[in-house]
Image 1: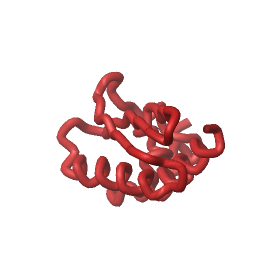
Image 2: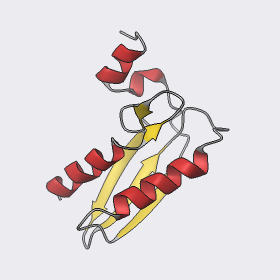
Image 3: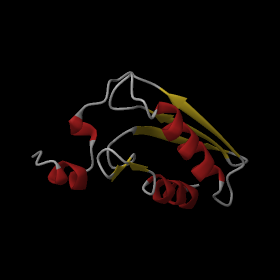
Length: 101
């Protein structure tokens, strides 16, 4: 399961928010990855804003991308807004890019 989670994270790091040029993962938009027996994956994610015009695109890209990984059977992506996203959730690399200490 740990190996599969690493592969999922690698895939999520390739899904880029075109407005900022960073991955959804590094932006801190992926809240959880739950891998269940049989290769069923449940991902909780959020967006930087509730009205994000790319909402459906991001959900589709996450679902499609993760479903292509060997060992993944089914992918469910749940879009949540609690807790609300904030810049402190970004990776250290992303924070450096935006000058956040």
